[in-house]
Length: 394
Image (tube, rainbow, N blue to C red):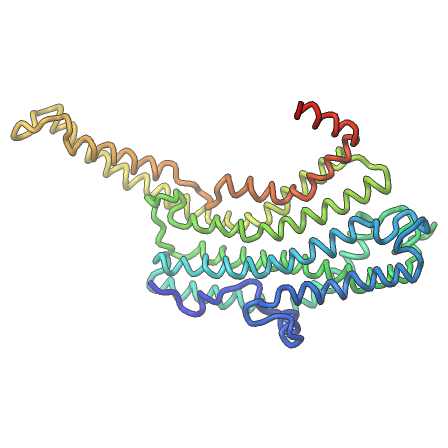
């Protein structure tokens, strides 16, 4: 079956007021082209003014404050690494998700009237994705919860920095700090929380699909009823997870280098962070637990009855009476077909209830933790590290 333009154009990324604004500014095309131009333009907005204003305040480098701008690992990790990755992730997810959604049609999983409901779910997802109200709500959340709560109480350093100086009644913002709070940080947080909104759109779409009469195949070799291809969507979110890991690493690095913290004191935060962000990416696929469970039970019943009939006939032919015509046992096709029947039943019996492979989970966890790995070097001195290398080589 051929996918229509509606299925081929499915995207949780393309659309919304910001996307339309970027199109009018010639920073993107209809298919998210011009990635480098967007990265350069947004970096100029969020990072360059911070450097210029902190330099004007005399706090870009030197000993004027405990944390000069050029030494702020969190700021550079956030705006020079994580933010470009959030932009790159849009193109990756758009291209891969569009092909994956089309497979519901090309693999003949949606048939007859189900096809109409499937297309309706796509149209509904696109309407939600394009919502002006949602993006305005996200902006409000960023400036209230994101800045006043999350950043102020969990990310801002207690030491004098290029953006603020701690005082008895709060922070006294520097000139660069005002740009940081009003423009740079909100823009970054908006791009990040918009990704979570997109994942909600994706989860809602999959939930609607899971309630349809999909033509699952319990004997499918992917051991996921024929929807195992959904597991591959996890890899599309790898840049997003790496970006969030970079964000976590930058925050921890600042606390280690400027407040004397140690990496081991953040183990609980790191574990919780990884579970949440990886879970948020893979959780939408959990909606298939119920339909795949029903498919597996039905498959075990159907193939169990088929196997019973075959075994009874095999038993009657080879054990209860001699085969007609003196057919030899060795090399008989009956023996091979009995083995094939056992293999077929094993495929159904080992069918997964979630279209998620363990290797996908492991790879996404590794991708999230990768930016944090260099901080392990803070737990060992350079002399000790050099000594270990010499011992290894010699």
